[in-house]
Amino acid sequence: MKTFSNYSILFLLVFSIACGSKNEKTSESESTSKTETAQSKKLILFFGNSLTAGYGIEAEDAFPGLTAARIDSLGLDYRVINAGLSGETTASGLSRLDWFLEEEPAIFILELGGNDGLRGITPSETKKNLKGIIQLVRGKYPETIIVLAGMQIPPNMGQDYTKEFSELFPQVAAEENVILIPFLLEGVAGNPDLNLPDGIHPTEEGHKIVFETIWDTLKNLL
Image (cartoon, rainbow, N blue to C red; front, side, top):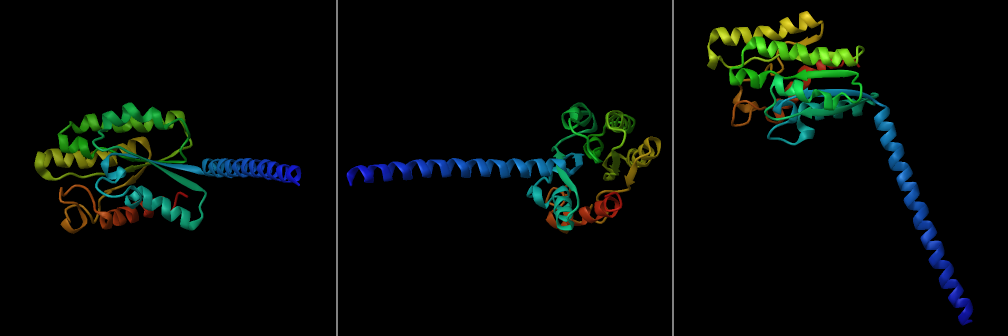
């Protein structure tokens, strides 16, 4: 009986290990399958600064996260990558763009320029960098749809600078033949109830409005 008992214990141990190994392989297989399914979806790339990154709030509550949630709820064959970086200027964006072009984006949403304006960078320099970003994307992926988010700034730098800055976005959109969202922060900028105490970055409620502004354009492209 002892011998039988020992064999029984050994059998159970081997069976348990085998089942565990099988379950691990199944889990790995399911995980790989999910990853491959996600990667097979077309890419929407948000490329911007702290507005895109969702400064001061959770990433899923920023407009790229809200876009991803809407797309998932509609069962659309797209996924979203948030490539926002706080403090980003058009120059630094141009220099880091290559890192995000390893994969072809179906839609590329460019949200840069605000920090240039706040820092008083010459609008002609901002314009040159925005065009450089667009040309780099288009040169590598001619089929990518490019959307440019227009920006405005407070008149701190003077009326002439403010006017020249706001006009550069429509100019870039026309010259590069890309889709323009005239003003990303329409209905949000200047409203203390929709912005964090810094008066620059939207709250969660503000991001909901920004998302709707973006979605009005994006929904026609999907």
